[in-house]
View 1 (cartoon, one colour):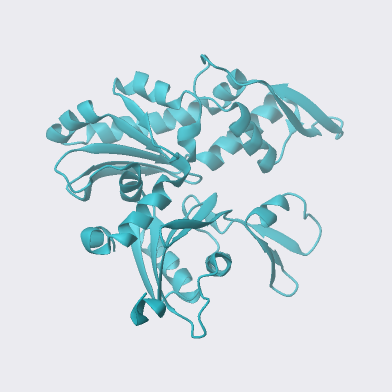
View 2: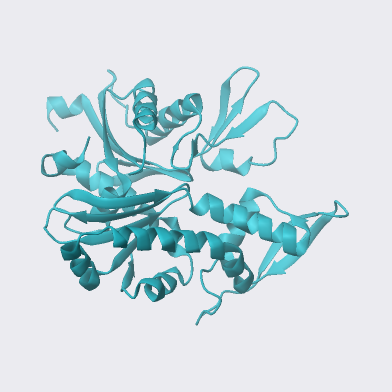
Length: 341
């Protein structure tokens, strides 16, 4: 390690609505929920990540707020986002020299982000201590992380379904040719599950329980070859106010998620409709690539394939595809420099 590298640190960050991942020296050093718990009396950070998420829904009527700084893929709470980024960098334990190193960061941003929202991300990172901040769009990072050679003149479609947004993009020659970004993704799926339990089972459940249900029995289709076991769901009875248990199956959750998944299908079809014919011909052969946590929804690939009549591939470790691609772009900065803003 040379003298310059000793005084410089480079990290890649997938600052996600649900989870944030930090990559340093080609390794995932942080993978934590994007959640901050703060004591509003003295503005003291009580917890970040998994610990803060464990407090979610359990701090009513006291001075502790559990905050998700990002909503819909963008910063909703500027101050909390600064705290989150700074704490994640601190948890990564990369500032171990006597003199504080110069920190370069490459951060993922949604393709549909506005200039104001992008500036909020940049300023949050600067306030957290970064000296140089670059941005890369999530679909491009996902494509690189999946292993697609984005610099080739061949069209590829990537669908990245995260916590806040679903990003659909057609990529060729190192650019996003056409894309659609909709705020229908993991958080909306959780809300769908909560609404379903309230309407069909007269039961209130929290966001954490809804997420557990989604992971345990979430599905995009009502017929699965290898269905999961029914899930024991706990909450509060809407009528009596007493604790309640209901067993739910994947068919119920497929019904609950149907409209949201249909919105993603529509966005995919709209993007395909605006794709140049030569690239559409490529996608007919290469198919559609799914990344993000939403790609793990049972039967989603089958449903999208049936709708589009195209092959659909799920990325290896889809939860980390974006972060992995951001890390590769950082490591090969000269090669991908024109992709990074």
